[in-house]
Image: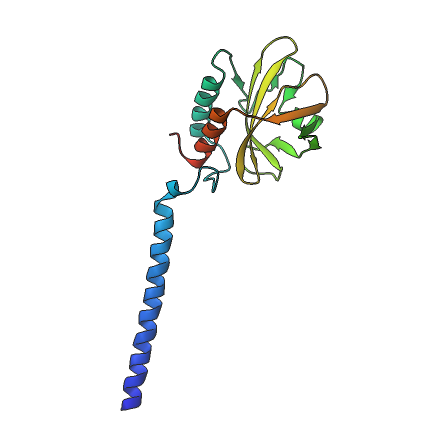
Length: 181
């Protein structure tokens, strides 16, 4: 009789432990999900592809960035011709791209279908004169948003620089994190 009570009590304790562990896991998971704003904007990007809601907000950010200039966005169909003759997105296949003096693997990939090291989600260009342009490449690199700029001359060697405009950079990070709605 004593052995039977002991086994029932042991089974009850196991059930309680399993329920408690499950409860703790659920509570921990729901707490992490319910407060995404606790994480810094540069960590844990919510999306790595782009949709029309992202594009609308990006259009606004680029308009604010280039107050006195008219930027044209690549619409996914008609190529953008830069003042130096380069065509986007064709340039990703035809030209060599460099950042900090090193060749990089970059390509047009707004829907996360390829494995480029620098995945370009959006392209905006402003032709400033016959030979000068300002081309913004909104990219993902190692899971983080980054804005690269092509201001290069006529050449198949494209030297990119990282945007140092804090407003534009933080807008892009915020858009991809689901902030700036």
